[in-house]
Length: 334
Ligand SMILES: NC(=O)C1=CN([C@@H]2O[C@H](COP(=O)(O)OP(=O)(O)OC[C@H]3O[C@@H](n4cnc5c(N)ncnc54)[C@H](O)[C@@H]3O)[C@@H](O)[C@H]2O)C=CC1
Ligand SMILES: O=C([O-])CC(=O)C(=O)O
Image 1 (cartoon, protein in one colour):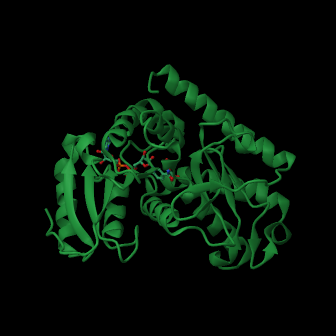
Image 2 (spheres, rainbow, N blue to C red):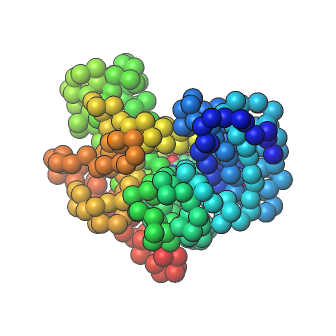
């Protein structure tokens, strides 16, 4: 569709599902401009949509062409997951129904869960050996679990779920409260599910080198910080009349960019990754943890001591993940 570039570097293949949706529209231009994989990596976009939205995806592709991005090596559009993931180096699984006011993300499981098995199978069948998958579509953790379950030949740690938006929200809230810039904050964590049960944890965070717990009072943490971050998605839906889109796309860019560039030595980030049993999270569940990346692989930060309150909050969120796993088993999705 767009002109081939005569680039010396082989383009990375980036497959984006739900390309004609709100997040897709906020995401694709940033990928094509080099913000996902950096200024030296040309990208070939493969867009997956349902048949009735292919025409809209074609319109977005026309606009992408019209940007004349030097790094955009081509665009292909599909309504079938198998060819869409063929040779994919990065898979951004966005396509899914968003919730509306009054719903929790888990309520989307029966509507959306069925999307992720076939996409996991398509990744298993044809993605590149270095495939990295980020699931954005809700409920993101359990959808990632479903996709991974259908890709037995792909290492499970390639399947991740997005909690970077929650992490970024936590950074913004703490920065605003302390009056310090976000880039002075280290070691914040989102634990558990991308849902209202998540545990945004600042017990180890520092702000400009000082412990965050010395700068904010405990009542603000439990009564304002944690619920504001955990319920921010619902607050956006209430205010905007539609779920977060540009901030979600931004977080997806951040997640993949950190995965491929690595985390700085003095910090970690948060991502939904497959549990190895760390912190009592049952092995195999996709839960958010404090994680570092070496540029290839995420690792769960080991050995943090959780106090009783933190442990209870994490356990509550993990209990919800276990329930979601049981629900998808009952629905026959895994
Ligand atoms: N993990 C996170 O932090 C966040 C997750 N989300 C979730 O992301 C998802 C997408 O949100 P929006 O872009 O706002 O929704 P949207 O409704 O604007 O777009 C979704 C797109 O996915 C497409 N789609 C549906 N089934 C598909 C399939 N089987 N294959 C390919 N495409 C398919 C639809 O045709 C539509 O174009 C929702 O589930 C939403 O809840 C949204 C914000 C943050
Ligand atoms: O809340 C929603 O449904 C969309 C989402 O995941 C978020 O904004 O975090």
